[in-house]
Length: 95
Image 1: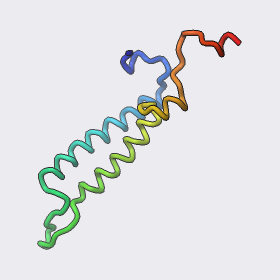
Image 2: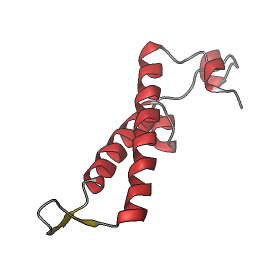
Image 3: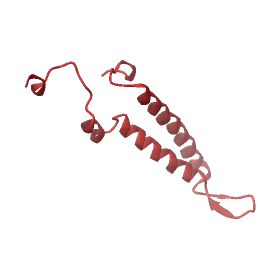
Image 4: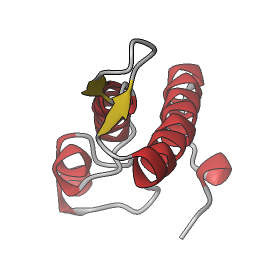
């Protein structure tokens, strides 16, 4: 398959969406690592147990990655909604 930069159907907005996806993927990886180390709860500055803030950061990053992956056609459903244009002629082109 083609690498993304070779696809002719990507525009400036797509590249911005890809950047958002990548930034949030990096955030996601960091917070998953934090959750592995510290767990779902942490001891706060007052000494009591509270929810690890990485859980919220993980959920936020996941939402953005899911949205951007859909806009970029990374999943089968969005690819069906927005098929990639090809140079190959199909039956509908001949009609």
